[in-house]
Image (cartoon, rainbow, N blue to C red; front, side, top):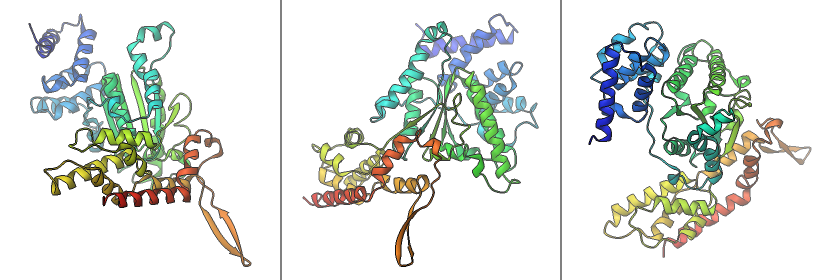
Length: 435
């Protein structure tokens, strides 16, 4: 009996034989099978797979053909043939856009089991992505489009990128991870080309998750743009944003590209990006509460050699810490332990010492966010009297309702009382670490 890999290889060889005979009787089904093999990461077993898909697309869809030939460039078995195939596009691909087209999609093995808390977002994804893909017939019956484009926003270090990877891993589709700042070109027009190239890549391997990290770098408010338009400045970014809007409108009719944006500064996004039909939903990824911090400690210390840990105490004294901060505490504690006490188990006191030494990142972020969003309080002396004045923040009046969860958290996390609570709990952790 053939193994799964052997069955796939045999199917691939039969497809290639038909293609070489110019037998087009099952062209569409063969191409669909090839794409399925690629999406499952089979190019490691069948190195000529990307080049073969490029050949299939060469006569029917040149953007998709370019993408797969670009992927084939990095494979020794097909690099020369791919370069020859790409020579027909000498003026269409510049060096910067070539880098984008050569980015390899990843097969994510992250699942929601790796994401601590955030149940409201998991529920959203279950309803808008996972369930629709598993029940396409039901959606077709009601002529309902399958797809979701949304933005994850909130303070850094609380799982926005991990969530996007978990979505891809949970539905079993490729994950394209784009650092938005890397799309910015050095010269006029390149950024827009790069944006277009990313969407071409997504269409070539759909269904997939297309993830834009630090999205504010690419989709910032157009009225705030300034700079030298000759070298990737104002007009280049304006052109890129307009291209992004066009691609988003096109993706709205493409049921198999799921677009996720991530940002720590959602108030910087252009309103046209977040209107209905493009990125329809803004999902707040809040800082972890005590229970979620406890889950974080349990997750990051689950494979460590520890004594019995007092998770409730650890999570209480780590107020103001993000999940990334907790992961850092776990790494730092483990390294220190191996260096000093390699024959013993990691203890509560060692973790408490790390909590006391490592200042959480949330307080600074919320203070900075408050200054940008609602302004900063200034005291002025006028005729011998103190007058309180607030600078105007960057949030628009019509955005206050949309960012209500964040604004609510600002009242708590950017307060003097909260700063005092964090300092007091770190001091308690320091004292307890000596016992």
